[in-house]
Image 1: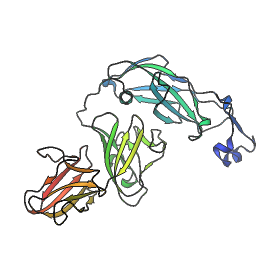
Image 2: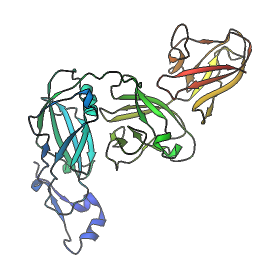
Image 3: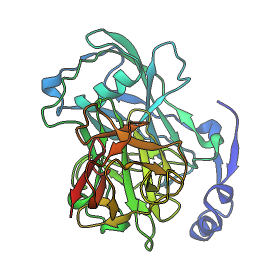
Image 4: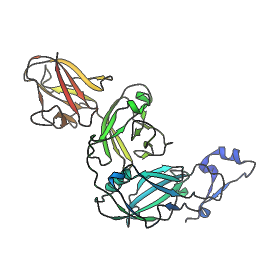
Length: 358
């Protein structure tokens, strides 16, 4: 271990000196005297065969506390990491960031993360686990690592759930922080990678989190750094820059996320536009859709595009059309003259549209 001596005023700020003034005017943290955490469960060499019927069962990880030469340090953070054996943790998966000394991982969640590492179902691999602890996230000198426990792990091939794609909820300031009423993002492949559009109206903080259930009692995903998710219950909120319709992308295996502003408008051959202008849409909060009512002529064609460009555009996903949409899909055609309400529905696992003649 590097022989590092750190004055605590540099880590915790001036307030620590005030609180410790009577006992020690110059508290010094000597990292060379630090005792690293020890991963106790599962034991090194354990053989774990995951099974789909046990997807909700838990596997408990436990470790000892990091010991420092200075007492009463209350803000030690622990990160449970895993990677394939012989990878030297070059691209570790962070399973958890917490101030606790244990973690109960469900077999279903572990299976997703193992598959995300490239493991094939029903094959056994050596997977290494370790605990990293730190006092200050952006100060590598305070990080210490446990010894590595190597486990023999066998993932399973998940069957497609009858209820449809895997789902995350997106509660936030924009909807009253109510997971039960929150919109969703979806993993259509059930592989831990989720996407979905969420509209954040003006006003408020634009802050939110992801939850694995329509409540706060299961796994919640908050701020773990720029573009990084953290499953610690005390993690901060995620945030988008401001008002708009955002495509959110989430990877619960790698614990990463991103956002892309995609404000859609209708464009087509209708009226005087001739594919040259965007017809704005109105957000219908009650029905969670984008809508516009306008007059069309028979033979008019249209589709939706984002941000006034063709990089992101949605058209018919199938031929013949079934109402679903896909990137670069074909134009939607109006058969009869009339006034129509056209709805763009982005709140479901597959985007779709409705055309209603008035």
